[in-house]
Length: 236
Image 1 (tube, rainbow, N blue to C red):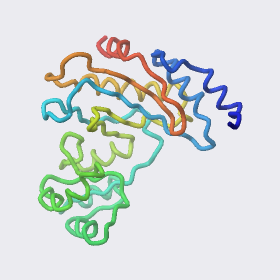
Image 2 (cartoon, rainbow, N blue to C red):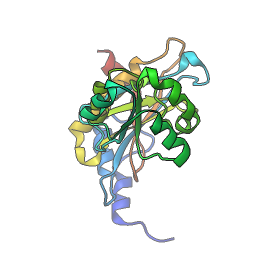
Image 3 (cartoon, rainbow, N blue to C red):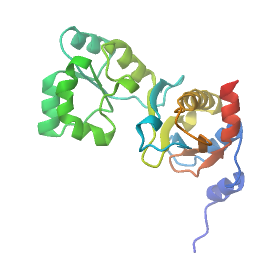
Image 4 (cartoon, one colour):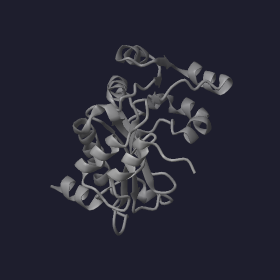
């Protein structure tokens, strides 16, 4: 068996896999264990005490991270009338009406990260629901992507707005920035996001809400965060 490199050995020595760390220490560790040659993304994975099969236990929303994610998102706006010019002025990358839906249907065009649609266009957008839905791209009022406030929606997305939602395993996966952000900016992003997730606890959820909270870099190990202390911090 080949000997592990010094960087790997050093990373393993930095933390205890069974321990739950305070936020500051967890963020320091996830930066230190980010050893790739590229600027790794730092991601939050939070397992929640909900059952996503039930509509009254869904956890979904969106929030603007104070320092963004370190990645610029490509925004498609599907609208008509004056909202076309509004979207273009706000900095949307692609703007159009039914022709955009046709392009996605017929050409399989998917060169965008987020879709914003005005309510009066949702009947048309619904035609590509089977294409956008599985990719998590279907516009939704809860995430602020179905709105007549097109300018505000585009600017928030460009500023670092992220969507959080539980998957089938009741886990929320959300990027909170890049390793190069440093501990202070990552912590601010993390606390804003966790605050939103904690406050989004469904009334129907029973028992412990935060089952596990883990921070990891793209290529690094997962660092466990003390969920109980997070709830205390948010409730203050």
